[in-house]
Length: 333
Image 1 (cartoon, one colour):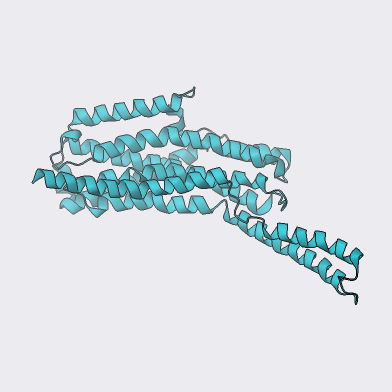
Image 2 (cartoon, helix red, strand yellow):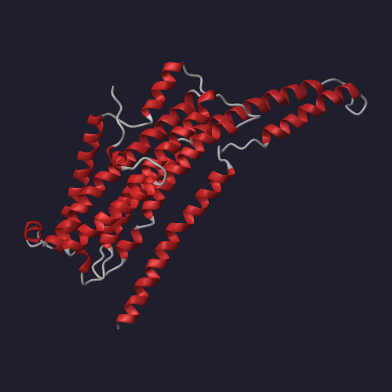
């Protein structure tokens, strides 16, 4: 089975600051296409072309960046995996891309989703075939952008889901749990957080679709749910198995500690009168306290703070978009 990089990643300039340059070039090219097609001159004040410019230009280099972080996270947990060397190599290779046939299949499924969305968008305006025959170049370019962005989102999201499912399998079956040092588990949270942040960045742009007089729920809700629901799955998938295993390991270790404590305390002498027994008991109590304090969620502080910060951005952008639209409405009166 031959693994190939994702087709969007082939567009990324792979040198220092190449991703930033890729974003700028794709944004500029898309902006020029919309400008020449007249899509930017819509009289309803719609910001939909800017949404497509940003999301497409953002997803391609950002997903390339996240794929590199996923490989780094795998390298950090690699020493803790109980897998043969061949299986480790195969697993690492699977995180780098997919087969060409899989990418073609996903592209086709994304195109079908895009065509379905276009169908419902046009039926809102009236009879489908009548509406389709009356669209101009400006609207036609926007419809092609819808088709492309669904294909791109399908490719990126399925790639992220595939990677987090690999990490979930490793978390369930292969990673060794050391309750006194859980730093080797932080790679699982980094994959969850960085993959989630990628999709959060796309959600930030959705308020652009709310700007304008002709905004309908069918133009916003399908795409929003198509990003948000997989994002929740991607976040939870790699960390829930780790939480479960750490919790079970803690309970098992605490039971063993309590058994030893009970054996020491079962003799007739008072602990205050038996200094030898007391000296044996104190380390067990200290160890029990340490095990109880072991965090079950595999988050390191930087990753958690970064996630919390980015979670605040979409609501703030949505509020900002609503305020801007109200301000524009008042000024236009």
